[in-house]
Image (cartoon, rainbow, N blue to C red; front, side):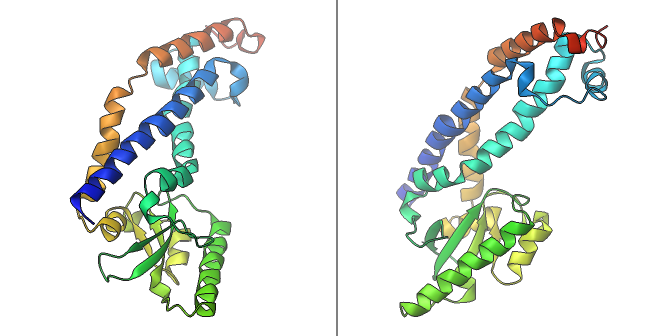
Length: 240
């Protein structure tokens, strides 16, 4: 892969992060000004508010509800759900027409063509996913035999965008018993032939993040939710 091709991927990654991840994150944040958006545990909410801020006033309760959604589950789920978009927009040069395969690339280690499914992180597949992944790879091998193509077991790989091998969950390790699971820096090196590409990709996302200061939006959302909490019968006996 040439330097221009690598820079093209990094630029497309920045555009993906800004146009897809950041914009969706903002839309999801704007939804959180209403109590109906939350499944509230009344046994824990005042404890969490006090744990976070030292009091359980409406603003503190709003923060205890909003922060986990905005900074945790929401953005991580969003990133995982947009993997196909990432493949289409950023890794279009590696697009595969094979069912069950996200991308194809020439491996920088052994110079063989790899047929790859992509997952987000080291804990992002469940027990049922393991058999689905293996079945997809089995189908590819059968199709290859039908078409007279030579595909080895280690030509079918599961690529994990971030993390390290030691962080892989037990479900990934079950896949790895039959098909290689390549993760993080190794995954991106195999695709690009550049040992620094993984860190360069993280930096590219970080450059977009610097521009994504949504402090005003977050504060406005917290204030709006706090106002609803003040007028809510559910919270009247909890507020002090």
